[in-house]
Length: 253
Image 1 (spheres, helix red, strand yellow):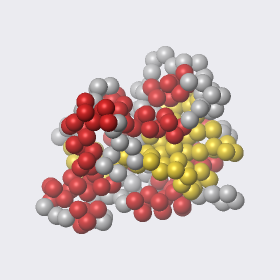
Image 2 (cartoon, one colour):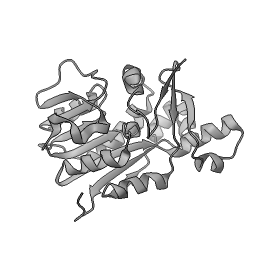
Image 3 (spheres, one colour):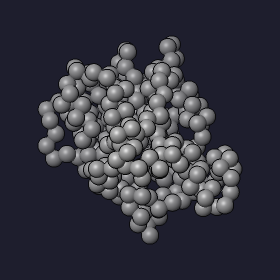
Image 4 (cartoon, helix red, strand yellow):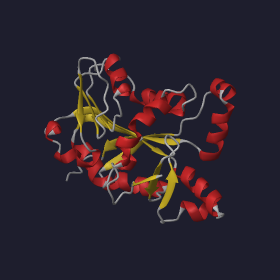
């Protein structure tokens, strides 16, 4: 098994080039929670994107951003460290190979502004989460917002408590790093540092952002009936958290 370390104080972007294609394959499955739950909820929170510029940070192959451009978004940019982008992006979409931990030093982004900035399950790869969010904050237009999603921390606490024979509370509040084989590719083992809800809220605050909306999307009733195994997984692990973040007025760095 290949062991790739992904921690907030290490090179957290390292696993992604190995996992990028595995993610796209997993997302293409009919019962993918990204397709059934996450992307529909993210898309709803984004609203009408006609004429808006979008920056997708950690965009994967750029498929979601291409869909937004198809819905009317303009002058949009996707950034991903893997460089595994769509071969024929639509007009108005630009791809940049780069590390999300270095947003504030990417020449291609210098001086640019965006109406919407997305971190769709990519934020956990940031080496310094506060630095990354502060950089994104400076790129927002007046009235713009950041849409950020993270796996619910309860998921990892549940898995560790079962593996270690400990309580849910012990694992939720543990600060010990943990390793696990990734479900997209069991040949890759990731090592992470746990986080809690309060950790996330404190990062947002330190970056000068306030939460306008928080959403915990779930399967529709029809999807629950069609994919009971996915509902069983959500009943146990809860799913993801989606945050709509805006700059705190008058706060500058």
